[in-house]
Image (cartoon, rainbow, N blue to C red; front, side, top):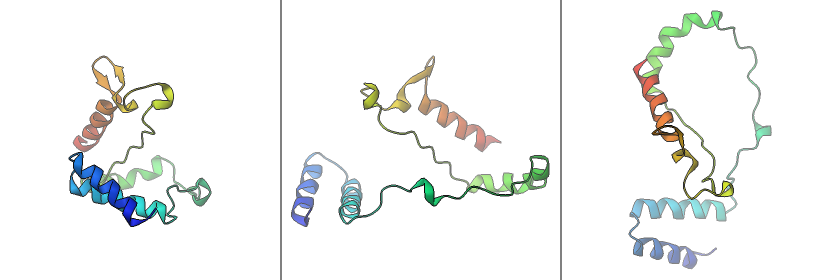
Length: 116
């Protein structure tokens, strides 16, 4: 894909009212993929964790763990949009309890972790 075609994407996104930041990020990603950039991390590149101590042996790290929580990032990978399941919206918006979606439960989980 050449820069002219990328410009067409950018023009269309601008006409649709997309923020320039979103357009720039999309074009950067498109250039990366178009240039052969990897979009997956193969499972074979991961090594198993070896030598973990038992839970009882981990107790000495509790204070350090609590201290690190304010600087910890939580990343939740939720998969695709659910179109293969016939859904018209993201799976994270499905109601899993009365009045609560997966996204609500994820947010509550993060808030609970922060409060601890």
